[in-house]
Amino acid sequence: MKTKTLFIFSAILTLSIFAPNETFA
Picture 1 (spheres, rainbow, N blue to C red):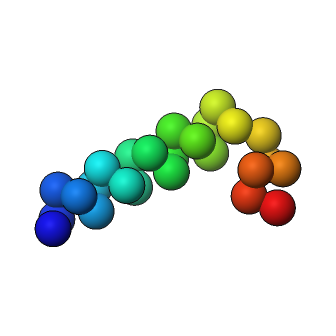
Picture 2 (picture 1 turned 30 degrees about the horizontal axis):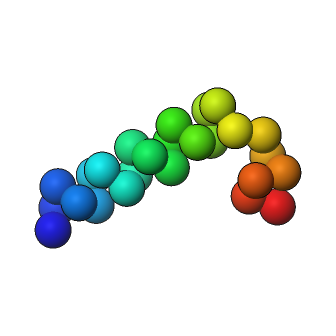
Picture 3 (picture 1 turned 45 degrees about the horizontal axis):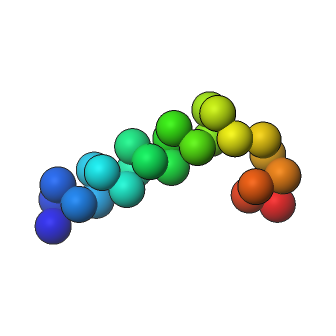
């Protein structure tokens, strides 16, 4: 469970860096 949460957090962090803010709008 903890590993899955960490994986999701890393994915979101990566998206926040490489994807435009419009993705979260």
